[in-house]
Amino acid sequence: GAMEKFKTLLYDIPIECMEVSEEIISYAKLQLGKKLNDSIYVSLTDHINFAIQRNQKGLDIKNALLWETKRLYKDEFAIGKEALVMVKNKTGVSLPEDEAGFIALHIVNAELNEEMPNIINITKVMQEILSIVKYHFKIEFNEESLHYYRFVTHLKFFAQRLFNGTHMESQDDFLLDTVKEKYHRAYECTKKIQTYIEREYEHKLTSDELLYLTIHIERVV
Image 1: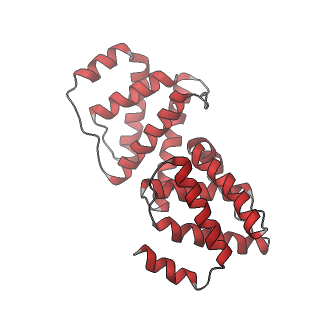
Image 2: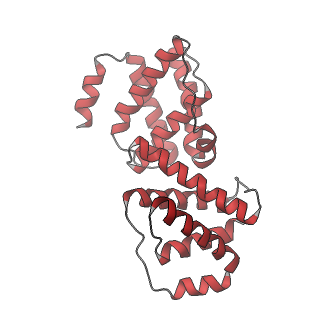
């Protein structure tokens, strides 16, 4: 189990590294009010140890997903920023902002119970759908709005279902028909997303997914 893994880790990881990871994880649980998968005790401790070692050799890793992480996982990224302060206080090492992004993704990982490569794919799909909506309506999103936050949250679970091959339960199509008529501009955009997802990921959208996407798009634009 996770505890065994944790114990084997103990042998080669400095104690302050483990303590700071504990601190970050407790802080994350408190801030998010969510359960985190126990595997984060291993993966985060391991990651921070590695990051500190590389940093001391002058070899920081660039985070290709930094921009997306800041926008799509705002709460987790804020925790990542705070984590850097904790690392500095505990070890005296100043890690770059890229690391706040990596730490954030470890937390997202533990929230969704997903493997790291999956998180990267999930983030990619979220970004692609947001781009489709942006270009369709020729708008910029108000990233501070509650509607945007809810849309992004919906996309996160949508993308998770896509990679897990699960579907949202479908109700009858009556609701979808109503929404189609009422929000026909948003629905046109949903159709674009549907075509894209079916082509790129061979994932068919249920009528409920079409329904929710349309409602979210209507609100966010």
